[in-house]
Each structure stands twice: as C-alpha cells, then as structure tokens.
Length: 362
Ligand code: TTP
Ligand code: MG
Image (tube, rainbow, N blue to C red; front, side, top):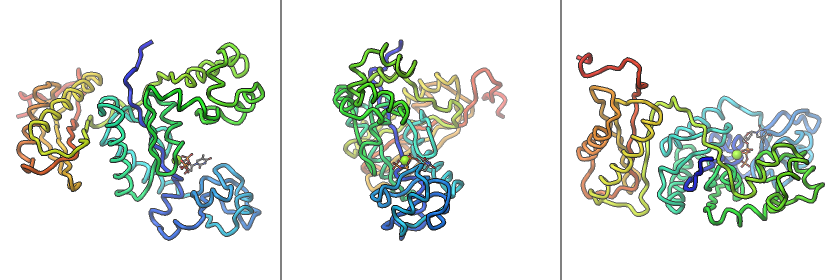
C-alpha cells in the first residue's frame, strides 16, 4: 500500500457552530446560555437540541438531547430555532477562506473540513503558523471561532481538533502520535458511537491503547470488519485520502513566512517553488489553465491580488513561473515586508477538449 510518511493534514471544526452563527449577527447573546433547537414550550416541547454554546454546556446541555430536558436544566437559557440557510451561507464563506490556503479540501459536514496541507507546509511548525493565520482570518472576516487539529493523517487530525475546543489548535507530530492517542477514551475515534463503545467496554477495552493492544481477530469478533480499521487508527495508521472536488475552479498555493520578508530573491524563490507544486496538481488533474494570479499580503495585512489571462490555455511550467514573476515584479511595492505570497491558476480547460489556441483566438 502506498505510504504517506510526510502528510500534513488539517481538520478544521467550527466551535458551537449554529450558536456562534447567531452571535455573529446578534453579539449581545454571547454571554448568555444559548440553545439552538426546537421550541421547548416551557418544558413540554418535543424535538432535540441542535447545539448550544459553551455557557449552556455548563448546565449539562448538549446536541441531540431532548429539548424538554435542556429546558429543565436551564429554563432561563435563550432558545432559538435553527436557521439552516443562514448557517449554510456562513459555512460556504468558511470554505471559501480555507480554499485560499489549500485546494485539496474535503468538507465533511456543514462546519468541518479536512485539508491536505502537505504541499503547502514545510513542516509541522510552519503548519502551525498557517493554522493560526486561518483562525485569525475566519475570526476577522466572519466573527466566528474554529478549532484546528494538525496530524499526519485524517483520523488523528479529527481527534486533535476536538481536544482543545473552543478556539483550539492542537498539533500532533508523527513521532508523538502514539503518545497522543493512547491515553484517550475509545469514543474519541470518529465512528465509535454509543453501541460500539458499549460492546468494547464490556470486553474491557476503554482506551485507544487498549484497542492497540487487542489483536485484530478479537476486535473483529466483537465488532466486525471495523475492528481492523480502529486497530490501525489506534496505532496511528490511516491512509485515507482527502476527497476533494477535482472540478474545482482554481488551483492555488500560498506560503506564509515565519518571519515577514522584503527580500526579493527569497520572494521569487518561493514563487518558483509554489509554481512547481501547482504545475504538478495541474498535471494530476489533466487540466490546462489560462489565468494566472498572484497574491501578496503585506505585514500590515493589506492584501493585493493581480491576474493575467494568457492568449492560450497552458500547462507549461515556464509560462506559469514567468507570468507569476512578471505580476510580482510589476506590483510589488519595493521594501515592504510580505507575510504571505500566493499563486493561483484558474480558467481551466480539460486536456483533450477543444481548446482556444493562439490561432483561433483572433
Ligand atoms: P458539531 O461540530 O458536532 O458541534 P458544534 O459545532 O455545535 O460544537 P463544537 O464546538 O463541539 O464543534 O456540529 C456542527 C453543527 O451541526 C452544530 O452547530 C449543529 C449541528 N448539529 C445538529 O443539528 N445536531 C447534532 O446532533 C449535532 C451533533 C450537530
Ligand atoms: Mg463544530
């Protein structure tokens, strides 16, 4: 099986998402206990809690609980009916932000996404810098907080994002993965619900270490083929890929500097490196592109993007590099320090399809 020794996977999950969306448009709710769900009808209502903020969680209220129970636990809480179309709008905006950092993203639900950042980060330290930048941008643009887990695989990243909520950032490097996973309760693994947990508990399996120490044959006897999967996860092994949309409308890569720089040679070097990575993805997707853009974010966060549309679709590496460097040279304000630089390709044409060439353009 193909190994992924150097993957850097992010899992981003919004904090008390539906409740936070309500705070974004109604900030005075923030300090109250707020429950999103069906009408509690003074304790006689049917239906359940969708989510609640962290103030309400202190009373023992949680997602999936009968709304009547939530009412009994905290009758003075503010109860709000879910406004799904509004939450979807904000969810799309979150996805738009993270797509600027990475095109290989897999939205996993309305408020979470996996990102394969392997090509965008040099190492886990660099990954942490980018994660903080993403968190900051989500906060500044949408007034929402999120938690990010970073790990060498999806299942561990998902556990990591949940461990320091709200507003968390948890990094699990490859050599710390076992140390991180093993003390945790088995229910932390995505997919181990109440029933599976109960069966495993009855067999004296309580922690992730217990799973790792149990032979696969015993696990499969108790819970079927899922036993092999959780045994791998417990040993820090998970090869699952990020399922991203290959028909995305752009391919981009960005680089956030650990220390802001105005060294032009360094900036051009990064443009070249980014262009190499973009070219690889272009080839993987068997696509050619006609529009090349660069993005520069200066140290004070002012950001410019500049684009150029070529006369023909291309997958030529030199064309990508030369155009990006030309856009940089024409637009960079000398001596200003840069915190982020990015290159984006858009305006695609699948290879093999009829393409507009230089000849038929005019
Ligand atoms: P979650 O990410 O599970 O929860 P959350 O974002 O509210 O809180 P956390 O900070 O712990 O991540 O789910 C995302 C949204 O999905 C949540 O805000 C409401 C909705 N949801 C339901 O409607 N019913 C449910 O049972 C759950 C778990 C979530
Ligand atoms: Mg969430």
